[in-house]
Length: 316
Image (cartoon, rainbow, N blue to C red; front, side, top):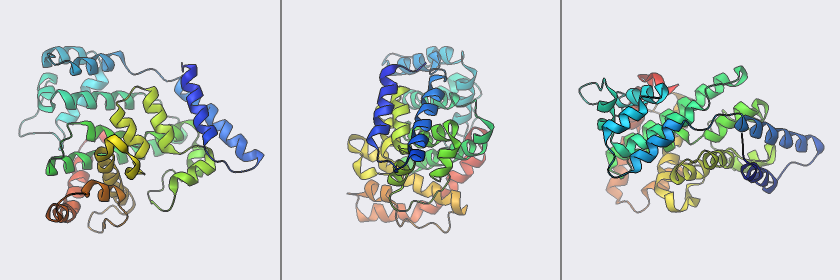
């Protein structure tokens, strides 16, 4: 079920966007709006276990044992946490074979964001056959972006504690929603095109009445995702407009650009940071030496992300 104010918010977003002239274009926009509302209206809400676990993680006196007992009631979240804790991104020399071990390794704050990410992805399990391939590719791209965010954050001590991986994983939520609701509209905007040329969001709004960033952030608000994640979904193609969460958005935008290259070329060795607006925003104010160090290490970080994604079955 979708509440009337939420539906009205989406309608206002469609009305605010410029549209192509003509009856056919108007019908296309109206059809997309109807299908998005129908899709989201028939989705389950975020699992109760996830919402209670996030609330528990926010409590200063929360204990890992209590959190583990709560999460064990949801097989998808339990499996996802164990996989991530033992992935190349988080693993130590010994495997975390039990949930409490995994939670201790990850830490409360990272657990909170990972639980939300796993729970949101679980809402999209019932994928229409026509959207299956695109959805798998988009989640794989999101995982690569999240892995890059995690690696850059760790290497350069940016101070994020889990939100960078979640924001990277979920940044293209609008495209996932779009391909599931209306594959024709998704194809019309070139949803699988990894090239960032010109005013991509403007072209999307002209073609289908909304852009994927606006659509994704609407869904994020509807799903009660953290403001930092919603802001990243909304502004990852416009990091200079991000406002309070600018550093996180810049990190995700920078990683998204690198992940797009991997999706197009498959090799980190040919990557150049030209046109990476997120990287420009992320490095603003950095000493020249630190900036040059990051530029020199990008290919190695991209290769490490590829290895992490390739060895983790939860990446697709």
